[in-house]
Length: 156
Image 1 (cartoon, helix red, strand yellow):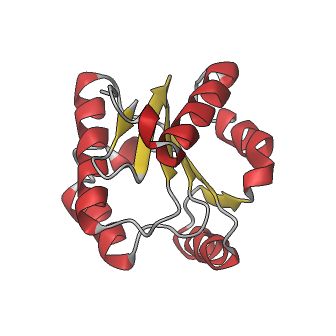
Image 2 (image 1 turned 135 degrees about the horizontal axis):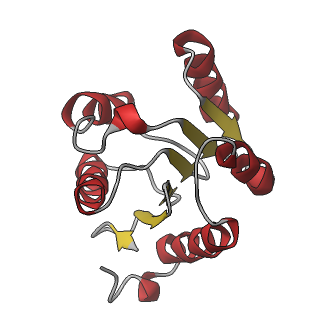
């Protein structure tokens, strides 16, 4: 598990699936850059992730942060290898934004409510190889890591 220094973003890799959880605070640019650096290092030491499950209760990356992803880190994280991205959020605004991106860019990028974790995993598994039970365990762990500062110590 990788957790940013401020404890607001945590990530884990399960097979070809990258799980990312954002905390309840807005994601700062430095935190987002640190997270993307973790993702790029993971891609270098393993294989590219073919899918991403991004859990963010209230907000997603800002426009500037999305640009950072697509312009500065696209090669490092092998954005071209991603087949599907599932975003889980309670925010109707974020779900609407993701739906618009899906429609206009024709990318396999879909938003779900956090209550639809199983549905999101089903959809991701159509094109991404990962162990479902391990993904559920990892997701629970990284959600707790952004909620509980004590769990952040000792993460690598």
